[in-house]
Image 1: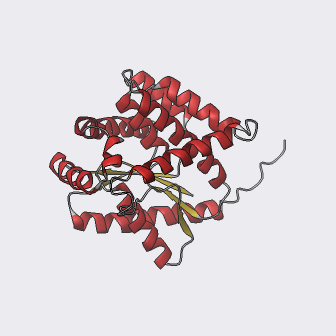
Image 2: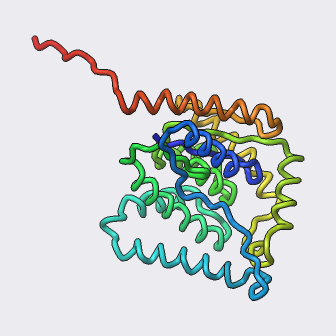
Amino acid sequence: MIVEFVGPAGSGKTTFAHALYEQLRAHGHPARIVLTDRRADHRSMLDPGGIVTALGRVARAAARSIGMACRPSANAVDFRIRANLVQTLPPRNVIWRIRLSQYVLRLARAWRQSVTSEEILIFDEAFVQAVSMLACFSGTADETHLAHALDFIPESDVVVRIDACEQLLIERLDRRQKSHTFAERLFETGLDIRLQSAAVVAHVCDLLTARGRLIIDVDANNQRSLTLAIDEIEEEILARYKRSLHPVAYPPTPLH
């Protein structure tokens, strides 16, 4: 059972995903968050600008990619997914092309390793988000290219879309930027790209809905609706989870 979140930057995907995880665990359900990036405050007197921390993250990401490249046969599916997505929606910015390529590769591997689990697996960002981000940085993000990109990604059981008004997004992104170190700000995108992602996410989710995929919409502007949404999502997840563990046994087809 895989649940993935999608939404513009600053909408609260990670916070909501962790809240859902905590509720599922509190109710005794086997749940786990996969590939989350909930950053802690790494400021220190020895590294006030966060340069060492940032370089460490870049080095670890590069090491993971090199490690996967050393086992091409075992990771062939992951490399194929990355190649298909990046070639379909190639980012114009070289730095973001490298960053998103590495992220998609890590995501593909984590997803492949998770599909045999009997837990409820929660991705605060996964393939629908990756397609949306690639589309934001690509100059060819029309409906045809988006449709091709969606053909290449594996399907989750539930997609949760977090939405928020532009003013709330701006306020959250401003607070986030102020809390970041100097090095972290160097790797951030501009505000225009982050706000543009809201429209791209909406377009991608519309395409998924047209394909019959379940999209649960959550309004991040209202705290009460967030609380109710967690209950609704939990109910939907558990219904699907139980069906996956106890599939319906159909009678055999008579032979003629």
